[in-house]
Length: 473
Image 1 (tube, rainbow, N blue to C red):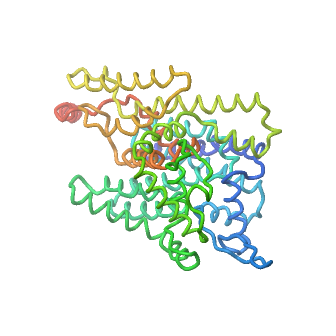
Image 2: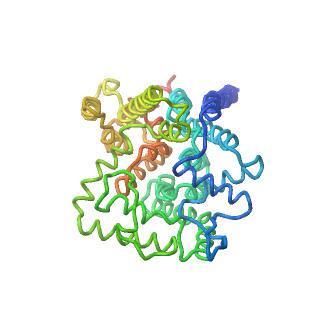
Image 3: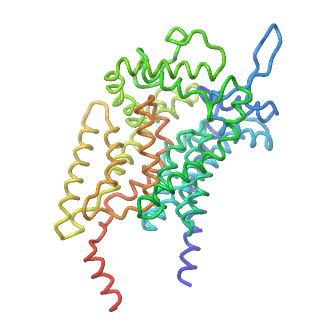
C-alpha cells in the first residue's frame, strides 16, 4: 500500500512538474517568438517543404525553370517533427511556438524520470525543477531550434534503457530511440557505446552490449541513409555538414566558433552537397595535419564558446524581433541566463564528489582532495575578468569516473548521462563551439548539480555492518 501511495505521489509530482515547466515556456514562446532566423530559418523551411509533400528539398532555377532539388545539409529529424505538426495544425509561428514549449516541458519531466534511477527522490525532483525553471531553457521554447528535441529523445533513450527489468531489451529499446535522436542530432550515435554499462560487470558482456547498441542505433538511420544514396550526389549517413563543421574549426581563419566558409577558402569547384562536404572534410584534415598544434591550441577557445556563457536564445530572439529586445533588456537577459548557467554548472562539478565530513573513516581524505580541486576550479572560473567555465564542465564529466574510495554510488543512469556530457565536450573540442551546443546537456548538468555532495558509498565492511544492524532490528 505504501509503495502504491509513493508511486501516486511521484506521478502527481511529474504532472505538476510538466505544468510548472510548460506555463513559462508557453508565455515566452507566444510573447517572443518571431520569424525563424539563422539555422532556425532552414529548419522551418525544411518543415514547410515536407508538410507540403515536397520532401526534404529546395528548388533550383535551371534554364529559367524551377527544378526540385533534394537536400540534406542539416539533419532531417527536427524538420520532419515540425512538418508533422504543421501538417496537422497548420504551418505557422504559433504552432511551432506551442510545440517547442511542449517539448521543453517534457524535457524537464524526462530529466526527473531519469534522475530517479540515479538519485534519491528529493534530489531527482530538484533536477527536474532546475530544468523546469532554468531561464535559458524557458526562452529557448521561443526558438525554432533542434536542441530541446534532441535532449528529449536522447534522455528518453537513457530512461527507457535503465528502467527495463530485462537489460538486453532495455538496450535494444534505448538504442532504437538513440537512432531516432541521431536524425535530429547525429552525435547521439556516440552515446550508444555507453549502453555497455547495462551489460553486466564482465568485460566480454559489456563489449557485446556496446556492439549491439551501436548496431541497433543504426536501424532508424539507415533508411534515411539509403534515401541520401538514392537522390543525392553520393551517400551521407544523416547530413552533409560534418566536413563543413570540421573545416570551420580548423581552417586558417578559425577562431573556435562559427565562421563563414567561402569557396575561396578551399573548395571552389564542387557541385553537389555530398561532394562539397567531402571536399571540406579533406581540406580540414589537411589543415589539421599541416598545423596540428594550432588546431589543438584552439580547443580551449572552442570549449569556452560552448560553456562559458549562455546568450544564444536572447541573441536569436533579438535578431528575430529587435523591437522587443531593447539594449538594456537584452543585456539584462543575457546576464541572467549566463549567471544561472554558470551557477548550475559550478554545482554540477560536485556531482561525483561525496561530502567528506559525512564519513569518519580514512577514505574521506580522497573526497576532500576532490573537493579542493573543484573549489580551485571554481575560484579560477569566477575570478577572471570573463568567467571561464569550460574546465569546470570537463571536471564535471571526469570526476564521477575517478576510482576514489568512498565516492557516491555510480549508477548506469548517471553513466549514460555522463556519456552525453563527455561526447558533447569531445565533439565541440574537435569541431567548433557556440553556447547553444551546451543546451543539449543542460539536463545532465542539472542532474549532476542535484547530485552534488551525496553521501558516500559505504565500504563493504560498513555495508555489511548496516545490513546486519537492519536484520537485527
